[in-house]
Structure formats: structure tokens, C-alpha cells
Image (cartoon, rainbow, N blue to C red; front, side, top):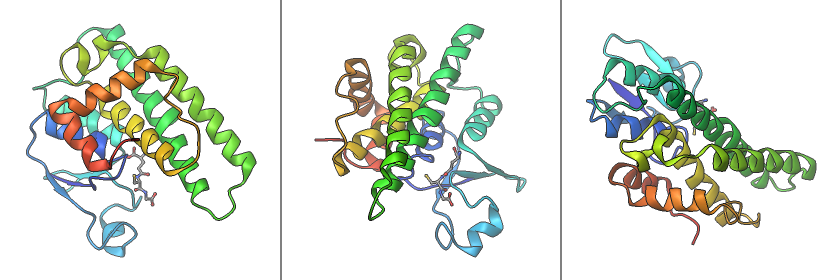
Length: 209
Ligand SMILES: N[C@@H](CCC(=O)N[C@@H](CS)C(=O)NCC(=O)O)C(=O)O
């Protein structure tokens, strides 16, 4: 299998975490010709990374679908708990991290990188991001993360999403969005020391100093 991805892409890192933690035989490759290239679009018409290409040639985009697939097909080092309610808790945290934190953070970064960011749009994204952060704080429980034992699907998305927020805070003059959330700060600091999570978070870039 080939995983088209990069070490700095916050949507790719969740899948790289899953692959590394589960010790799978997957090659990490950058998109041939670069992200927007015709060559890569011929492989994945969505044009997005991560994108897993199976040995039979099937092309699988979307980080959540890829991680789900890998965890189902390769059961060793499971990313999901066996209890149904615990699984629901993991999925909630994963979705909050992806949709409520990372996606909002990426849009905010895009706005800040324009010459004159639209303040209304910035306000909307910031509000959504703060809601995502508050929700993650609410739903974070050690037992559904690496802190309770093995890495879970929640960690795959939450750790990179929080690292992305730390980097966003560093590169913009936005307030320290995690500063009032000691539980989340503790989580990301411990993740940075974790054997698998730490290495892949380091590849994304340095945290807020
Ligand atoms: N929902 C997708 C998002 C993928 C995504 O947007 N990836 C970014 C890189 S971090 C990308 O490929 N951007 C290029 C584009 O959208 O054309 C996932 O989780 O895989």
C-alpha cells in the first residue's frame, strides 16, 4: 500500500499516526509532481492528501475512512475500545478534533494569510474554533486516549489538531487559545513525549514557545 501524504499536512498526520502505531507495511510518498499536479489528480481526482492506494489499486481518500479501514482490516494494535459506549466517546472526540478544531483552524490560517482578512469571517471561524476547543476539553477522558493505554482513533486526530492550534497561535497575534484549558495543554505535552505521537507531531513543526 502507498500513502500519499506529507509530514507537515495536518490531515495526513492522523493517518501516519495510525499506520506507525499499528506497524503496517505502508509506504509514505509525497504526491507525485506536487499537490496540485495533473499527475496526482490522475491518481486522486479529489486532489487531497492523505490518500491511500491499496495493493489492488483502489484509491481511498479521506483520513477518517482510511483509519477506519486500516483498523478493521489489521486488528493488531486496535485504535478502538471494545465497549460500544467507549467507541462512541472516541468517535465524538475524533470528530470534534477534525471538524471543530482542525478544519476551523485551517480556515482561520487561510484568512490570516490574506492581505486584508475579513473580520466577520475571522470572527465566525474563531467562534467555531473556540467551541471546538471547549468541546474537546469537555469530552477528553484519559481512558479513551493514549493516556489510558494504547493510542486511539481520537488521538490520531486530536493530537495533530491541537499541535496545529499551537502553531497557529505562534504565527498569528490570536490569543493563546489553549491557555485556559490545562487539560488540553497536559494532553498535548504528554503526546509530544509519546513514542509514536511525539515523532509525528515533531514533523508538523514546533509548538508554541
Ligand atoms: N477531509 C479530508 C481533508 C483533506 C485535505 O483537505 N487535505 C489538505 C492537506 S492538509 C489538502 O489536500 N489540500 C489540498 C486541496 O484541498 O486541494 C481528510 O480528512 O482527508
